[in-house]
Image (cartoon, rainbow, N blue to C red; front, side):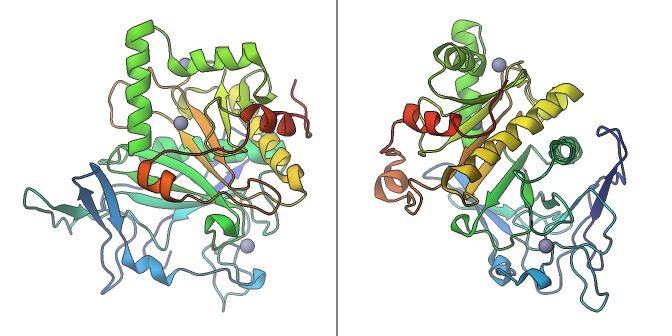
Length: 364
Ligand SMILES: [Zn+2]
Ligand SMILES: [Zn+2]
Ligand SMILES: [Zn+2]
């Protein structure tokens, strides 16, 4: 791209596993900060023991442009270039124009006085555009296209995970204005972190402890219980199970687990990736069928870190958090959630699971 950011077109032939246009980001490559633009900075919170990121330039982000000015649509008129110059692709991945993590090679100013620790936010932020079509979604795309999305997630996971200093590749989708989405074109994002984020850190510690105590995988154990009880299942196929967790924090929260113990997308074979595409599309369709409008949600992928450590006890899964309590009421995070870290769910997970289960499509 003109400003030095990389962009990767994915074009799949008949074989969904084979994409061309591979071009991996290497150390020292990628977005150069434009003149005068501050490098995003990580600051350590010694009280909660976690990083926060200061990225003040993000204030200038494009905010809800009209469809004809969408920066994620392929360029139609060269006088008005978008982020994507060509139109001939299945999916495209590129560096976020307003990143929270960048390749900071050459600007490594670190300050640590024993209390306050700050350093350049070294990493990558990518955008993955699911389709050239502006008006679409995971629910509306064919399984074959969602399957390609899964392939690109797997490819980006492997590629970004191989970048030096990237310890965690976090794939997520924010959907709907309620979730702060500023662009409607179907897309997701990837943050390649230089650390393992705290939620995953906690899940890793629990699954490690569970393995030591019982010899079993925590997630396999949960899955066994959900399949046996069946009251919270929303959708299942031969390789995946989607359910509202026993301990759901959001009324319509859904987690999707592979039946086979696989720590990341990388260990999944072609058939499992196809089944994952079906399961994700099914959950998205149920969400859209719930109130008759595209339900806002956050979708995140939890998989093993890419720091070279032993994480075989970890079990890949996808988590969806829609903010709606009802058709027109949202759940807000307030005092108890934000100040105490305790979620109050005023619905029964079993009832919400039943509502979602009874919507199309049925599982197998
Ligand atoms: Zn668009
Ligand atoms: Zn497992
Ligand atoms: Zn998780």
